Image (cartoon, rainbow, N blue to C red; front, side):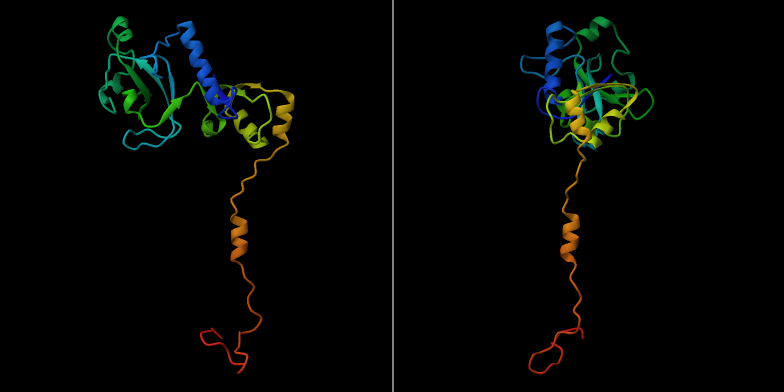
Length: 223
């Protein structure tokens, strides 16, 4: 199941939900033991790349997971570790004590690539992600979380985009009032392009400009 949010900030936003989920994982001991007190890295952390990096072959919107592995990439990319992936070699005990590796889908079917967490381009947790970030993706089951209060970002188009991310099942969490407000609002794209194009249009002169004294065309005129 993929958890999608309409907004980024606030308790029902992607940031707030990611923080809450990570806190619950740590409290229940579900593999969320961090590398350090202030470290965001732990076993099972979902990752979302937020900028393009051609050097890494990672791009905005790519989703990965942080797992312990026998592979221990020391720089940006672990090509040898990518062929086996997490948990494909060695014993369970050695992996439990192994380094944390950020794994992402590779170029071929079933292939994965491993990266040292510190070498990744800009990224964030992906337990919850905004509808905007999920555009172009589909998931079997989607939980679409709306804020408790109406927000200007909510619109019929955003709601439609979030709903259509689900292939099979959708859970829509939001009050009737918020949903009705979203359905009544259309997303307006204000770029100013029409105004700028209009400003460039000038009426053609009815007749050539002339010198007042001679009534001859002004020098430099095309007429």
